[in-house]
Length: 245
Image (cartoon, rainbow, N blue to C red; front, top):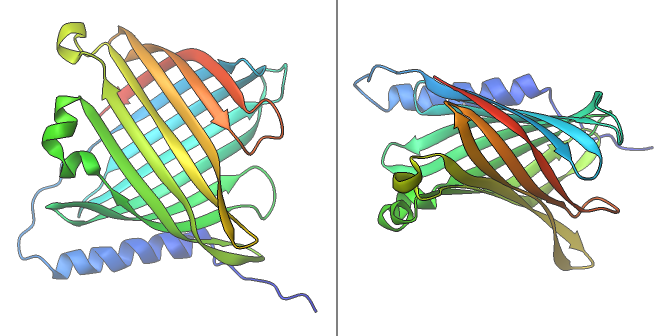
């Protein structure tokens, strides 16, 4: 008889995560600092040289009690088409464990096009650029690293230490160019365990943005996905519009 591995609905993970850390935070402090809403909506439309189109929507919201929400959602077309048919999304809830320590406890819900292929991940997010402030400020760079220590999926055995996310952003000569050009990107370092050995598969994107007017940018992006059977590299180019609040 086949044994099924049950994974609770995402709402159970999400609300349990928020409840636990809201409780810890509420009972661990005597004073309440008024919260100020902040974040952004970020829309990116690309054409990839591998002959498909992508719409990416990024959302960041700073929540009360050191909580933060971030999501990335990609809508992608079939080759030689502009109709967006498949999607991939990462929904993140982060909780900063201490105001003075740049480390977040993270929960990530990964949603993929298809059946029974979504993941739940638990990890820690560290901000080296807020630890070694002087060095990173000098090179106008922010950098975070987020190892995922546990991963759960419906009808699949749980796995551990599955990946490390690297995310960065660099302002290119901000004083001279008046914050008009940036370089940003991420690298997902995926752990593959086979025959007692560890190998890595990479999904990485590096985006150059040039401000045209206000928060409207022309963008070019170099992409690598070693999971793909062929044409693992591509160049995307398009436009970005960002709403900051």
